[in-house]
Amino acid sequence: MDENSTVLQLHDYQIHFGTLGPELVDLVSPYGKIFVLVDDNTRLHCLPVLQVCLQNTKLHILEIDSGEQHKNLDTCQRLWKEMFALRSDRSSLLINLGGGVIGDMGGFVASTYMRGIDFVQIPTTLLSQVDASVGGKLGVDFNGLKNSVGLFRNPLAVFINPEFLQTLPAQEVRSGYAEVIKHALIQDVAAWKKIQKITDLEAVSWQEIIHESVAIKHQIVREDPHELGLRKLLNFGHTIGHAIESVFLESSKPLLHGEAIAIGMICESYISAAKGKIDEEELTQVTAYLCTIFGSPAIDPVDYDEFIIRMQGDKKNTAGMINFTLLEKPGKGLINQTADEELIKASLDYYHRLSIV
Ligand SMILES: NC(=O)c1ccc[n+]([C@@H]2O[C@H](COP(=O)([O-])OP(=O)(O)OC[C@H]3O[C@@H](n4cnc5c(N)ncnc54)[C@H](O)[C@@H]3O)[C@@H](O)[C@H]2O)c1
Ligand SMILES: [Zn+2]
Image 1: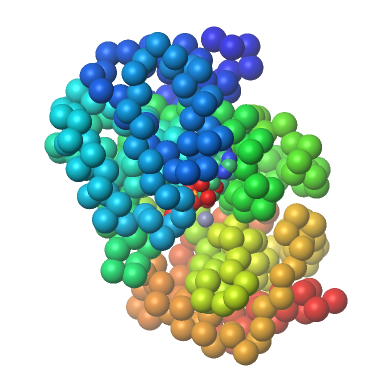
Image 2: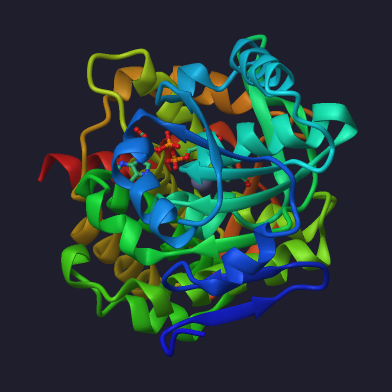
């Protein structure tokens, strides 16, 4: 094993951190046909690295166009057809080499092909390394709803190589970093103290940060694999963040997921403070750090009602109340909280005031 490699042993599979090496070679060797799913970007930037590692293995490349708009059943059908055309059987393996779109859809394609073949996740974006690669959620967008068709299933293994981030656009790295901040804020005060020292994302040595962040997510999903309770901690920042993301998606200046979630985390921290959970100083600290990393893209008060309509449509709500995960304190999330419209608007105003100074 490479001296810089580390492993997180889960109950039924391993997550390897570091340069791709002999563990991957050994893992794929018993399989018949080996497929690699890439998109146009990961074919260019990431596939050559995998090919060096698996140089003595015949790889069948499956390529799709990059982008969330291709995460659908039409693309799955094309992939299943390609696999049938190559007479692939249940001894085949699918390696998903890409971001969350490739991982979610490739895992779904593998899990349903002939009732399920094994698959390996090699996430290549920061978001997919710290978030999508852990927790077993697979699927595609359907009927206008994100991730509405899919299943839970674990991969054979996950290989997280931070070197892939070198070719990832800086804005995508920053977007993924929102989930790193979220993991620290909901579960790990030591991690929160540590990451606040990071102000330049281009100077970060990622492996340790990613390992710690994955360990936090893993700890949460292990206790609640099917999102019945504790896993809701991961929704911090996402009730307001998703609403903002979806409204901005229809505008001329869409936000990346993590950029919207950063705004959501500021607003939901405000709500936490207003409800007497975190104190003023902690709110200021969380707000200041998120603004250091993400700036403060403007939101327009004209959109507040539309944001609230989207929040009301969130499938996580119960009894007509908008469901929030708030902060008890930095490093400790609090699930199943609510806030009325007035407080939600006050939180949006708090953020709005930051974005106009
Ligand atoms: N399963 C889960 O638990 C879970 C959790 C969070 C998000 N997701 C899903 O993940 C998806 C978003 O993931 P994402 O942000 O990784 O998006 P993505 O897969 O679309 O990747 C973002 C962009 O980066 C490119 N790219 C990927 N790796 C690269 C590299 N190393 N160098 C250069 N370019 C590279 C991709 O081609 C794409 O253009 C969404 O569909 C979301 O629903 C799933
Ligand atoms: Zn997210």
